[in-house]
Length: 254
Image (cartoon, rainbow, N blue to C red):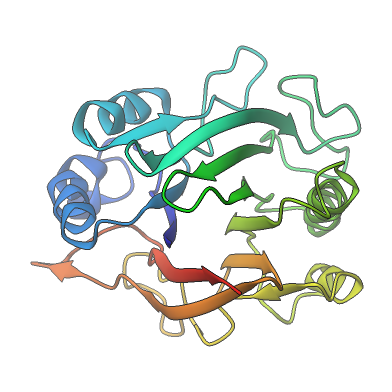
């Protein structure tokens, strides 16, 4: 299974991003996806009109997810998956908060932005195997909010009735480096491994950072094996795929 986590960078017109505005990145993104043919893509920062664009242009995929606001608008953590390869058995959207079923809810220590997680239960139609996939985007300002959000997701991954039978994968933009205090939470869950541990940098701010940071991850139960892992660092005439390098990992089961 070829899995990608991809912060697509929200479409803000040309107010901030200039030649790297979404309208100029569209074709590069589509060309890359069509070339690489990933089985599943976990997107972050997908605005509603961009979700429509993905559905219209990624004909081989279903795209699922909803916005993070009270009205289910605003950014999504969308999941695109190959129509012919996976059967969607279950879908749950929950907010990173003390009231996870309340749209738009958030922790007190958080930024103004609500944060959510898209959880999907898939069956691989070729092998019959089932797995759970969690896609999230942790808070960009509140360290405590990131810690609470990550803990909430990891707890859900393990406390689910299916934890022993249906293994889980967590992907997304954590807004935290591997050395950040909130990432120490992972030590409490040694059964989960960072499949992106060899990747040193994912956020580059459209090439403006002298030292790009690693803040994007794919973490999986230890019954999964990592194949090739790398970043999509395409650059065409000064235009990047996003301000993050998409991270691609080939995953196998033991």
